[in-house]
Every structure is written in C-alpha cells, then in structure tokens.
Picture (cartoon, rainbow, N blue to C red):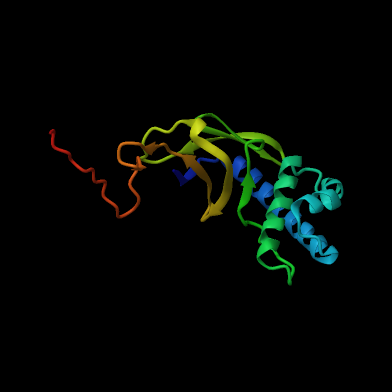
Length: 183
C-alpha cells in the first residue's frame, strides 16, 4: 500500500533562501516551457523535451538539468488537463523532486539539488512507525507554506497478509481481525 507522508524540513535561513530561489527558478522555467508549448501546440513530454530542453538549459543555467526535465514533465502533465489555454505557475508552486535530485543519507537528513548545488537539510517525521528509507518511492514534492518547507513523500508499506489489508488502518477505520476457534 502506498501512503503520502508530509515531512518538515528544518532549514537554516541560508538554506531557506536557496530553496526559495530554486523553487522560483523551477516555476519560472515551467512558465517559460508552458508559453512555448502553447505557441507550438506541443504537449507531449517527449516532444517538449526534444523541442525545449537545450534552449531551457541556456535560459536557466543555474537550474539543475534533472530539474529542467521535471519542469517539462510538470508542464506536460498540466497540459493533459486542458490544452485550450496556456498554463501559469506561481513562483512558489510545488517543485517536483525525483531520485536523481533528492536522496536520504539516513532518515534524519535529505540531500536536495538546488540552483546553488546540493544542500543537506534535517528532517522531522513526527510520530510515525519506524520507516525504512528504501520504502520511499521515487518522487517527492517540495512545498512551502507559512515560512516552512515540506517534502510530500510517497511511502510503500507492506500489506498485512493475515488480514488482507494494509498494515496501517486508514483514518477513521479500526483494525479488526476475525477470530477463529480451534476445531
């Protein structure tokens, strides 16, 4: 079973400034890609990559190359919903990270690719069962809310084979198991 987990980043003032700069650059790249995609009427991620990647790297040289690829994918995904109008991205919209731009040394620290190189930021998971970093799937969204950064991770939890259900009950659901009496 896959669940989403919101993890707080404990940034220093300098790290927060770098992450904001990275988010703003990423979303400006999304706007730039969206404008050209709409003008060319090209919406497929593969075709957009072929059309815009090299020029985009020249226009946004500080943005990591994999972040440019994620920006192309984000624009392509938004265009799947509505191709009749150009899409705009706010400066602080969520930024997509993948296994090339985000890694975990252990569960106390994340390494994120930014416009200033990689930075290592401490994490706060909250009160959850012990997690295995290998259960974290490939993509996470970096979000910013009220002066705080968060990573929205997707975690792969094993299903409970005895109950036929996930090992963690969902909100409002109590775990029940059928008792069988010995025969």
